[in-house]
Image (cartoon, rainbow, N blue to C red):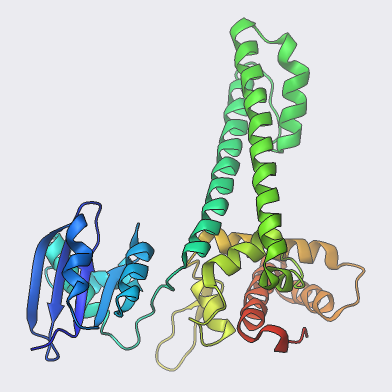
Length: 337
């Protein structure tokens, strides 16, 4: 029987393969396939459906298999777990490959969009910048904690920490003075690196018409626009804007039963980085809305008065996600409301 579906459990060096025919019978089971032999194993296989978990290297292998003519689907690991027949106690590579093969055949399963090389390269810029930001935040908090041991207590604001630490450095005891100066020098270096990566993102946004179009939306700048384009491309993997908002975790979780709808807090599913960018942009929109008379400013101020600050912020973030999808999906045909 011909193989119609294959599940591949990815790893660093040794992979597992589980293939089934059109009646679901396992006809190709290889629990140990070396990395160098993975593509060769699929080279003589007729085009079929291949499923893989969306983990490290998944997009690279997906592009390679797509070039061979196969149909490839990437699945979030949490959607594979229910299909593992041996449960949590029987987890191994072969069981994972079989579960992936079963999960990828489900008609209503949500899949991860396969990213191009350019998209992944742009996301690398975002990840490096975010790493520098996290290092800077950690260093500021470390410096605040050390200075508090000497009776110097400062607010969390980064500019305040820099200013007060510079003013107090000469009054500190010997080795603490050395540590504080080194921390301030490292903060200056991290500020410079973050500024460099901000310039990289501005360059990316300037060269991409889709990013320029997204920046017409309130609360979306270079960082958010490039992140959206790098993550979802033209939005072809979503049928509507609400699907994108749900993918980002900006819609309320449901606890409905017996015909009664119960909506809770937002799900916070999906990409936390992209969601945080949209939320920060929405906060900026709300902060600058007072005194403006455009439709969005009037809407978000009325929503804040009726439902509170954070509900208005999340609603604005979800609205931006929906409008961003419409812009990317329909291009010039999209008209700002």
